[in-house]
Image 1: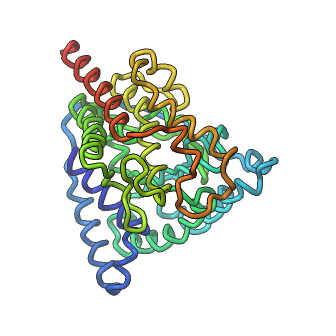
Image 2: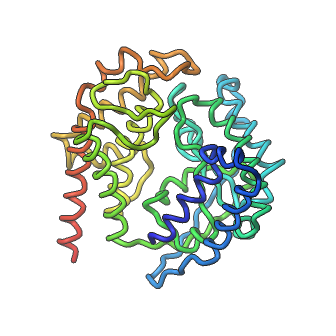
Length: 342
């Protein structure tokens, strides 16, 4: 699993704008990395663990859903669709959107355009094709920013190899079931690999991130313009970083439910998990409140990277400490359930 995860991290970086500095070194550097990625992909080990086959019905996006009263706000979705069909289709098994923009329960000004780009093996193992895809994805990134200038993760990727030993804790199947294809509807078959140790390790890494942030006062992840989010608003020019932090906090319930074998869609996860952690739930509740009222408080699109003055009143202080507390409680409960099931 670790080799698969490490490869995925490298591939995501290479295809994102975070790797743009490579081009300044010369095309030979980009080519060298692409060749290494092609080799590494071919060498990925196949699991010997049992796999569960799952078929997910992916519906094609309906243009009319994005042409109503919010057509101007949602225009980047259909522009991305046109770009994908014209320029990227040859490289992918499918190109999905998921999350609230897919299910149309988005919060205007806050929700970002979540994607899952399922790459063909023949593109990954062909350095020239991979470099062509990289250049086109860098151009397509503008459509993500058009909907949400504060978006922090860019495109999310999956490969044909990943489909054949699918790690549900990276993208829960319940999320896939609510996604839409920008290309065509299809039945997507996965061979899911569920490992209690892998799932707990994935969750434990989030807990460890919050713990380090609490201890150091800095969230050393997803820096933006050379800066990280600090504890208790010590740098108010870090809204992009704050949005990333809040997104992790609000994703804890869905990953917790997936870990205990009760996956569901994100918007349903809060009510299902809250009763087990009601005394420490306020951090997740406050993060969710920031999301819900963002469109009422802020101009759209958001300009700059300043944390709004109203946000500290809603979210409260010592957010790293409080996030660590609730995440640690969830992890402890996961471990306890695993021990009882053993």
